[in-house]
Image 1 (tube, rainbow, N blue to C red):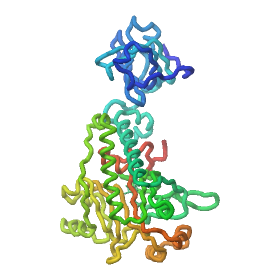
Image 2: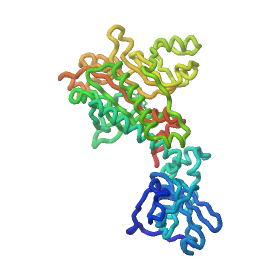
Image 3: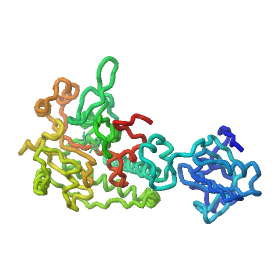
Image 4: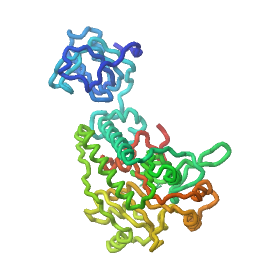
Length: 443
Ligand code: AMO
C-alpha cells in the first residue's frame, strides 16, 4: 500500500517526546516528528519518532492496531514527517520508559529516498561534501544535534555573561565602504552605483560605539574571501566581538578568559546529556591562562630549528612542531610585532616595534585576537600612512576622533573556532549550519 500524504489540518501535537513517560500511562496523546528508525518484527512494528526534544517509540502490533494502520506502520520509511495519535503505555525498553500505542497516524510528507547516510551513528562513513549537499537532513544526525545544542548554550552564556557586566549588544553594518583587517581579503559587492564590501569585522564601528555606550558587543557574521581550503577557515563566520572603554589589553584578556570559563561551566551545567552522547569532556583551565610573549616563542622556535624570523606570523603548523605540553590547551600569545597587526592596534610606548596585542590559542588553533586600540587621531593617521592605506577613505571613521574617543580595548572571538576547541570538531564546517567556503555557495 502506498502511504497517502495528508495535511496538518486540525492535528496539533499535545506532547513532545521528552514528556512521554510511564507517569502518562493511558493518556491520549498526539506526537509529531520525523521517523528516525523502523524495526520490523513481523507482527510488531517499532517506529522511532524524533522531535526537537528527543525520541519516542510508537509500537504497532498486528491485531491491536487496525489493519490499515498496521500496514501503514509496515510501509513507513525513515525521514517521513509523521503525526501519531495514540495511548501511552509503560515500556521499560523504550526511550523514557514508555511507548505510544497508535490509534491513528498521518504522514504529512513521505520520504521518497533513502538518505545517503545514517542519522543514528556518531560518525558518518560518507564524506563531508555528500553530507553538506543535504545539510538539513545531515543536521538530523544525533551528533550534530548535540553540537548545535551546545553552540546554543555557548551563545546564550556569552550574552548573559556580558549583559551582567553592563555591556550593550549592538548591530553594525555588514555592507561597508573600507577594509579593516589588513591581510584578509574582501568580498566586493554592488551598492547601488558604487562598489562596497562585505564587512570583514565590526572593528571600526564597535570602537566608535565605545564613545557612546562604553562597553559593547556583537555576535554576528564576518566575511573573509579566504583563498585557501583548510579545516579552520570559512568565508562567512560568526564572530563574538567585544569592545570596552577605559580598558587596555590586559583588562580584556582577563575578561575573555573569564568568559571562556563561564562558557565551559554553563555547557557542563545545561548540556550533560549532549556531553554524554558525544563522550565529550570539557577542557579544564586554570586562571590566569599562561601568556607567552611573541619574541620568546620566536626564540624557542628558532632554537627548535624552525626557519622563522622575528616579524613573521606564526602558523598552526609551526606551533604544532613546538612540542610543549604547556601549549596544549588555552593560552595567550602576547605583544606581537606592530607590523603583523592592523592599523588600529596600539604600539607600545616604550618599544613601538611591538604592540599591545594578543591572540588566544587552543593548541595550534587561533580562537581570538584582540588589543588595546589607538584612541588619538594623529596616531591613527600615522599608522594608516605607514601601512599604505588611503587616509581619505577613512574620513567617516577619523571624524569622530575629534570628539574624545575614550581609551579602549577589545577582541574578536570566532564562534566556530571556539566550538572546534570545546567540542573537539575536526572540520570547522561542522561547527556551522550552512558553511561557506571557496567551493561552496549552496545550500
Ligand atoms: P581576526 O582577523 O584575528 O581579528 O579575527 C578574529 C577571530 O575571528 C575568527 N576568524 C575566522 N574564523 C573562521 N574563518 C575565518 N576565515 C576567520 N577569520 C577570522 C578567528 C579569529 O581569531 N577585528 C579583529 C578582532 C579585534 O581585534 O577585536 C579581527 O577581526 O577565531
